[in-house]
Amino acid sequence: MAYTERGNFGSKLGVILATAGSAVGLGNVWRFPYMAGQNGGAVFILIYIGCVLLLGLPCMISEFIIGRHGASNTARAYTKLSNGTAWKWVGYLGVLTGFLITSYYGVVAGWCLQYVYASVAGQLHGDPSYFKSYFDGFSTNPWQPVLWLFVFFAITHFVIIHGVRNGIERASKILMPMLFVLLLLIVVAACMLPDAMDGVRFLLMPDFSKFNSDVFLGALGQSFYSLSIAMGCICTYASYFSRQTNLSGSAIQIGLIDSLVAILAGLMIFPAAASVGISPDSGPSLIFITLPNVFEQAFSNMPLVGLLISLMFYALLALAALTSLISLHEVSTAFFQEELKITRGKAAIIVTVVSCVIGTFCSLSLGNRDYLTIGGMNLFTLFDFVTGQIFLPIGGFLTCLFLGWYVPKKLVKDEFTNWGTLRGTLFGVYYFLVRYVCPLAILCIFLNQFGVI
Image 1 (cartoon, rainbow, N blue to C red):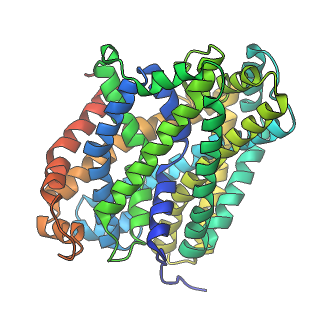
Image 2 (image 1 turned 90 degrees about the vertical axis):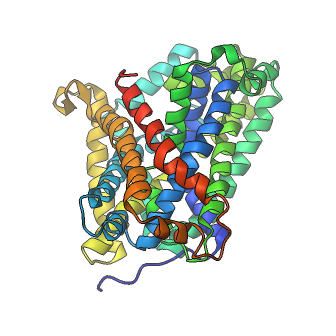
């Protein structure tokens, strides 16, 4: 069976939920809360929302324009718009970035499944030191994380091989509402705990004395990370949009959903942490080490409720990871399907198998195995560093320059306004942001990563 024609999303709701699912992931439920906790809570959120509006949405619309106009995988879409010039390599960078993230992201996604199992099996009980030793012991185990990695990729593969409408769109219509319901249930339970309002105040009442350049740059970077910019996901999904899809309207709706999930994640975590006296700035360990202790203490008088909340939380985390991993997998699947002219199933097998192999090495590298380190970093940390701190900002920066300065303005405006069928009132604002503000802001993020500013 030869390569077949690509699919399209079947409804506006499918477009919004699938693309929002791409953006909503561990960046919202895991990274956002600890970043907010370390950077002053409410003041960080205000700056973050501003960054989403000024940086995230213009970058998302830019990827929408490139993806829909190219109507092909990310690499080919950039190649078409660049007429084969050197700008095409920005598209290949996006595919490479998405592929590398797919591999190590699957490791963290597997951890979520382990914690779902541990919640059901009643293993998440003990003192604070127990939860740290539990996580350290599991994450460095040579076979357990790999097993869950394979399970997670099997689920993702099953969705991908069923295509855009019957796979990605249908899964998004089920998974995204489930994610919201679980999130709201845990938020309500957390806010009903004693002293929970201290956590709510921390999250919603800004203390502007905590504002500094680090908070600003942290919020800027989080907005970029959270919306999945420059990973190839947004551009690939946009290639399945119809010519009637309102690109700016869709970007605003997705940005609202993404920000809402992030804020609800904070309302889920900080009230519970405040109830048991846990510091909100616990850092990356917040989800897998600190939170099990929070659930244990907060619901000590209601162990069954605590078990249920813990189970729902890690199920939520797994769902968020799944929606993102599906979109990341699709970036590479679409690339191999179209460039090698093979069936979707064969392309998906290539991505799944290679990602499982690379992910296995990333997982094993966490066990202090010297032969899986490069430059003093284990493979997992190296992949995270190279993609998150180098490839993503460079890809976003070059995309803004490409669309703002190389692609003809008329083409950009035609896509933005659906060839004059939509009012282009905000086009001037968008074009100014993507030409000047976004490149400068992304450059600041990049330089800040290396301590230059």
